[in-house]
Length: 365
Image (cartoon, rainbow, N blue to C red):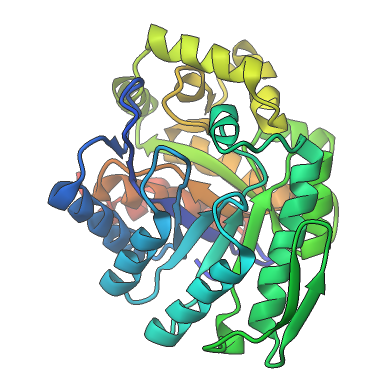
């Protein structure tokens, strides 16, 4: 799995387990207890991800989660190549401090990180912090925020920046960041405001994907980088995959009510787009919104045989998605199954696909 490119090569990130004080709704991969048990889980998932050849690991942030910069440091110390993909919310810290953190990581570890820039958050999180900035203006603020960060990191001269939301006056980043360690930038690209921000920043526009047929009918914008966030459960037999899926994400009435409430109060375009997808229209097609509708996770899942799922992933690649962020893995075995899917999908894009059974030796049964 190499760098993204037109030949079907893709970049894959997994997701770090979360530690939250909010136990109101059970979410797989999230721990309410801290300490050695949680820390070991983070290290395990990071090492598994690197061992499977994935590029990096997304680390969430919101008001209920612990500081993801501290988790990034743990991951850098426990792996050799894995790139922490840090969710960054402008409300939480000044752009100078983000740049300082990145430069410090580069200085201490000689490692690159990636930024998943957030314009929004849970509505209650923003309310608690007194942020009433409208949706589109939050993207304008985030664009300025990211621009200021990158200017600080890219220049070896004092930086001056004058925007509507942020100003810098002759600031020089110390220690400087090596040019080879310039951070990758991703952001949500579902809304018009998100797409404009991605164009301006040259960032990867990430989406919680609708069924791939939607993108085949309405192609993605050319000359932009696109990514998607999704879960994958694939096995040799369809019945086996679905049994695992329903066991991992059972129906939850409380979670359904929480999802319905979140849909009413959210101004996120992607949330409303996914909520509007008719699950009945995807019968016989390995696209599943059950975990999203039960408030277990925010991304759709692809569930089925290796071939079924890899064919859909290949079609997502063919319409223009090159970056994939998968959901929190429950164990190392699940990452091996995902690896099979992505390798098959890449081969299908480049040429004749291998039979799935020939690759199953990688998966621990």
